[in-house]
Image 1 (cartoon, rainbow, N blue to C red):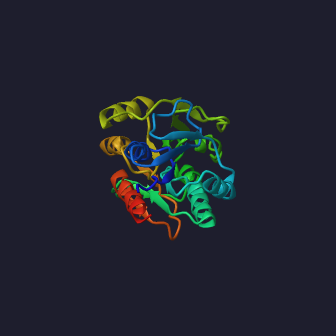
Image 2 (image 1 turned 180 degrees about the horizontal axis):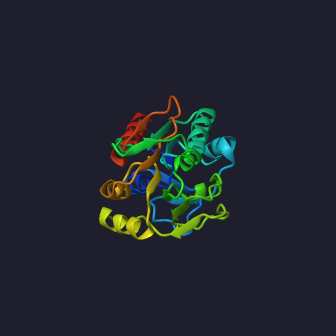
Image 3 (image 1 turned 90 degrees about the vertical axis):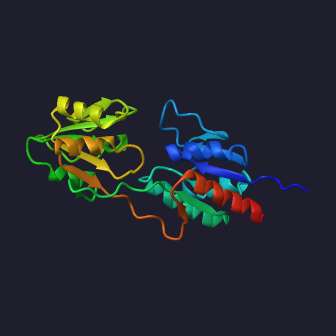
Length: 246
């Protein structure tokens, strides 16, 4: 007798999540969940669910009510609240949880680690022009500095940007040449970014080429006890092992 395929809930929003969704769609019953921040999300595999769950308790209730057999957290490396909620919900609902976490970028000589975005802004010298590759959630959390210029690049416009912030609505450039040309045109003197890893290293290469100081925000600490893999094929192998053990 053939076993019923497991129902997997994929918390998505990254390129790795998108790749995994297409790998899983033909093998399991897949529900892909997006927070709904992006107006025009990329195409994912599986049934699509948009919106929040109502914290860890709401997510645990969804896991039970929807008959979810396993949970994969493939949200952004800096989505610390979502990582905690996923771990709490999986524990409450007694469901296996895997974290798909792409590798961080290795340190470079031109980097200075800073605790967070306010710390990065505080370190800027007077007269600096800082390019912020930190996501739109940073737009309202900036300490007041009238002696520097702050340029934030985002895909979607922030709802309540800080006073004096220059918002640039555009995707990251595809290569270091384009990023370097942009930085030169804007007169950028410093790059501020999060260590998100993945394919967005062109801005770092451009900063190195122009000898710009980089203020790097390290990733939040991972949730203890949650197994993690670095790529979509490894996550697929985890799901297959679960299905084989069922």
